[in-house]
Image (cartoon, rainbow over the protein chains, first blue to last red):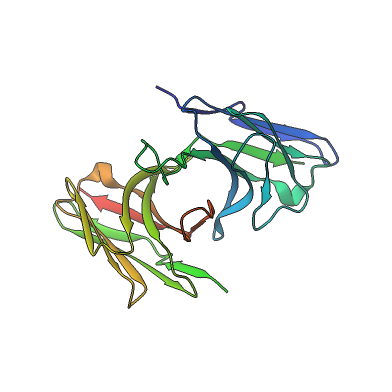
Length: 117
Length: 113
């Protein structure tokens, strides 16, 4: 019954490494999001995508990029990981279709906890 | 700037009592307000959505109110149980079509047996 799947639950990377976080949803949702969650700061939006190959910056896009080549998959890329990117990363999806199941509601994955040493 | 405030201190209540959590916002006119539950190490799970023209929404033991004049939402859990212990997040979306959701930092609720 898993609907949003994040590829890695725990990752440990070294400073300067390139990091890929993958997210797949099986609900045919148009919108997909990447958030990071830090104690005391809550969830902050990094990037979102409202269609294939479309992307919009969120509130904290610096140091990140994204890719959406297929509707069901949204990838977050850290080009050169830094220690201040140690965090919990949460992927989510939603439908734009009014009245559709999940419309305007975020369905989250289980999260990927990234540690950058 | 837009801001959402939830009581950052943990809320401890006795089993069977009603828990009330608060979400206040400023510089924002949300079309929707949502509440999510998050357990440690997991992603948030949607609970309830209330629209700007709705005053109250209920689902089983949960009730949400939305006062756009006060810019506040209250989230109530009646007959609370230890299994309700979790962090509860409120989230706002702007006008339909913005797709951007802003979250509060959450309130940790602990229901004592």
